[in-house]
Length: 427
Image (cartoon, rainbow, N blue to C red; front, side):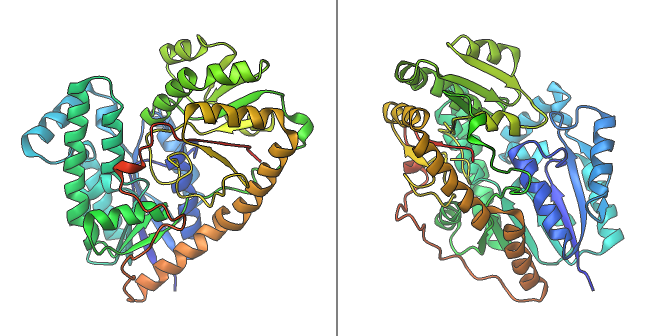
């Protein structure tokens, strides 16, 4: 008999066109292979801009999983007053902002209906953002996914905000979230992490916690190698919607610190940014020579088929999106990726990839083999389903004692290198 999994998500993961929604969408698919999954989710404005979008996304997901409750819009994305109220309540009560951000009673109503309808055997929280609803779920095994170690992500973000006042407030929020992580993560039956290093960081913060590393995956059938003849000489690409601070910071820093050197080393180079950005951001980025912002595109494959070098210039992040930019991935510098922590060295590595066809091919070939072996979604899903079956059978998850495989066990703050940008080919 198939077990019932109640899946709570901070975003309705359709279309799966962002990092979080892509992961959530595929994890739902993989869990549904062996269980009946009921989804209770908030709807995000940048994913579903109106009621029709919400209903369309929910209908699409109902074709994939057993049950999708009515999605609930996030109030603060539609009302500045609501957002200010949430910040004010956070300051007054010393609860993190997320406690109020995701506090819409309509979500609680949908959660209550779902619990009554399916009597879940296991509850999956797809983010610590939803912790205020823990008292509404039944006493069954509970797992929580940490797409990043959120307190550390906030702290790194605060360090890169020009305004000292805003930066201090973000640091304050980081401390509040850290308190919640320290208090609640030992109580979860399983903490699902995206990287070994994040698992180590959580253990350093909260002590003996039960973790399982489920890395971000890739649809290796959807993304297939393309002929080298399609590559446009000198083309450099970054996939990163800049409404997200880490991507915006990465793009600004890359263009200011690395792009001039790349242009000097390769005169025909061009930089292409894929993902949503505001008109002001687009104008700022395109003020640099040979830069094109393509915004949101329905299919990124043609863009990466033409790419000679893909860059991941993140200074703020976690999980698998960051030496910061490749943390959590089975990377070997010089084999399936190039990793440089200095802007000058990074620019030189990009130029090497652009000029050396053999280097580009070898990196891409080895990266593809790594993706198929480690990150194909069925591979990722089998491991997570096995762990959940263990919980459903009543066997406790083991306490985490993992050690990073790259011999670089460091504190979270030490990992924030001044410039950490892997250069890699997209295939």
